[in-house]
Image (cartoon, rainbow, N blue to C red; front, side, top):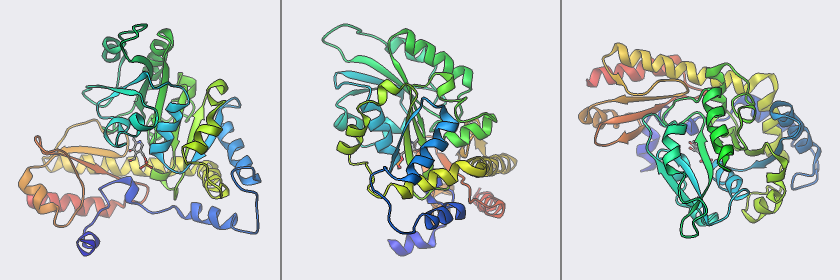
Length: 346
Ligand SMILES: Cc1ncc(COP(=O)(O)O)c(C=O)c1O
């Protein structure tokens, strides 16, 4: 099995398949000197929190975490009770790929809303805000959106604001899974806060792992009152890193010299190249290519042949839709070779 995997080209399978950016490795090595106090009470964590506040606003409360699943779940746990519900797209990572973690750790209900492109809108969400005040029914509490979405599309700031206004008007909160917030910001040419907190998001999961970090995610609360109990929730949730300096150092490097932006711009550009080469080869691209993902239809026999050489996700078995991802390490030549292989199969 291992041998088979080693022989496969996995570059287009996920942005998690890429390595760590050299600047991040340097940052890790730079803080690897001597002793420092544990659990985030160190100077490196203070510096990283300051850098995050510079980006997300001085009132933002920031907590570093190990991974994105826990970041989503614990961030939501901080603002919910088990009798409440999260309204999310049926494609949301939260509901598809977190192994009932929200149900287990929050005890809440997830309400899955069908969307054509991974994006929620007020019109899509409104019919699901039901049973408010009825003791027999789960109480809607949070609308959760993913930026960029699991379908590679990107919410415009005005779309986020409309959802935030709707949420707040109905006594709900807006959560954003920003595992790929950088890719969205690069596409929109806007700041990270413009498309999250400033657009009305209450709780943000801000990710770095998919865009060049070794391992590091963060929860950002834009309203400090939501963060009050989070130190306890994070510890109980097993996400309080003892050697926090190593997560903090990564975030500091990620946010300096626009590393996050350069990495995301590159990944997005490679996805655009991939999509345009696929279209030129007669392959149908099924979603707008706005971040670092391409969805395309490839006939089953061709997928089977390609899978002998390349590993990538089949998104929908029935429609032969596949998901191809680029990252900050994707090379132009890799894209051209991959498309040539697809053309050969077709
Ligand atoms: C949109 C989204 N959110 C959250 C996560 C969770 O990240 P992790 O694998 O670090 O738990 C992922 C991972 O693929 C993701 O794609």
